[in-house]
Amino acid sequence: MKANRLVVLAVAGTSVLALTGCSPSGNVAAKVGDDTVTTSEVDFLTRMQCDTLDKAAKDPSSQGSTQMVPIAQVRTGMVNTLIQNALNAQLAARDHLAYDKSTLRSVMGQFESVVAQVPAKDRSRFRSLVEDVYRGQLQVYTLAQSRLQSAGVANPTQEVVDQAVASIQGDFRKRVHIEINPSYGADHSGVAGATDPSLSLAVSSYAKKSVAAQPDATWVGGLPADQRCG
Image 1 (cartoon, one colour):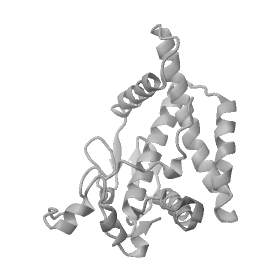
Image 2 (image 1 turned 45 degrees about the horizontal axis):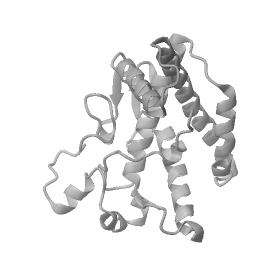
Image 3 (image 1 turned 180 degrees about the vertical axis):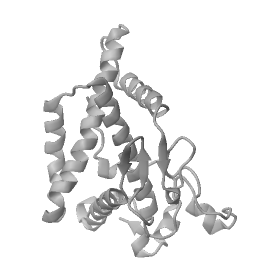
Image 4 (image 1 turned 60 degrees about the horizontal axis):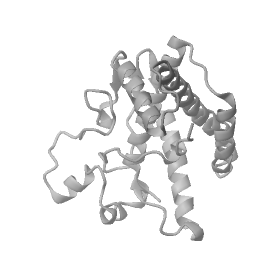
């Protein structure tokens, strides 16, 4: 398995919906079947991501390679990551899925360099959350490989495996009732950041830029410091 990009960096592809750095009230970001994704988990991972981006932006060796992003985009990315993690865990429990423990150890070993950069009081929680995400990914990956082998695909390419994983996850998602805090702008399929949660239409130039899937760099740079990362 090719190790996916570290979860704290995997937030691309979500829409930018909020213009402030405030998080939703309450502590329920989403309900995934009987499981709850908490806003405290979302905000924690968002803070870890933003701290990582901020440090990278100040590192002379990474100048020009760090992209500034709105905190709202990071936050919706974390909501979707944690929802998928809950779905993966439920699928793994239902089908008693195994995973390659050596691969997990290797991936987490690589991740330690990121963990070492966060405050000591946050490291255990950060490591645990990310390990849960990778474990779930590995379990679904193992299931995809098994199904492909049963179908006679002995040496599938990474693209074929990724497509199988997406198909498995998509089919299972349809079986689970997902409710997302409206503040995260979810669509009918339970994907945060897919719609504008505000009651008004994005008619002004500024508003349209705020809901763009790939926000303009100049617009992002113009946001207050507490509303962007990097």
